[in-house]
Amino acid sequence: MLTRTLPDVTSDVKADTPSTLQWVGMEKIAVPITVCLQGESEQRVSAKASVYVSLEKPDAKGIHMSRLHQVINQLATQSCTQSLIKHLLQEMVLSQDGIGSAARIELSFDALIEKKALLSDESGYQSYPVTIKAQKTEAGFSCELDFVIPYSSTCPCSASLARQLYADAVNEKFSNASIDKEELLHWIQSQAGSVATPHSQRSYTYIRLSLADNNWPEIAPLLFQFEDIIGTPVQTAVKRVDEQEFAKLNAENLMFCEDVARRIKLALEQMLFVHDYWFKVEHQESLHAHNAVVIDQKHVSN
Image (cartoon, rainbow, N blue to C red; front, side, top):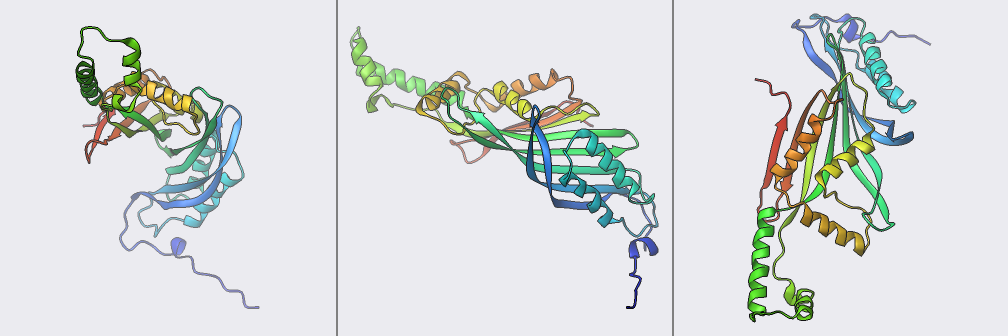
């Protein structure tokens, strides 16, 4: 059988226009990864990996992409830890035979986490989008953690207007100087007592944490911590007692997007493992066809 040597353009051909390039690679590679969400509990999830290396040799035609794919496939057989990511970044650089000295990995996946109901013994699963971004450069290793948390928000202004309508309705219904308690309670719990409801909306916070070279936090406890900070997390399986408690939580946490943003910012400022942060609060309003948003970050570049 005739043995042929296949051409290797990447190695044998020089660039037509010599120049360095910051990042070259591949995006959205399908790969299964095993992540530790809480304690020692690991979960195997479907992820999308994006990998890049720097091209610092001006006359190099391109990078060796197949070698990057071989490196990232190691995620399928090992637990995705900070130490593994550091190792893979180093392997990515070495695989390029001196073309560059920097590497970058982005892993996007859904963390499927079990959540208990507010009061009952019900429970269900909620999916949280998470992205881990890590890179190795001359400045060293750095990492970012991005995640999205949905929650409910009830407008304080709308709640105030609804209370005014309730007061007007009570004044009209019970015009005498004294009110019979039983009659009032019966009226409140009847259909006639549904005078007005404040508008609520599905809301989201998008948070990006720059961890530098600090240890990764456990994902599930971190997500639950922010849900506690906000105060009105969305629920999974519920009974009526849970739904009533959820309504109570919303009444106790009437919030503009500015209120939520300040709660999140205060918490972030107290997290010692966070080197830098960026976040966005988004209330997808039911009153308007547009959203109310807040964007803030720790270090603002000029």
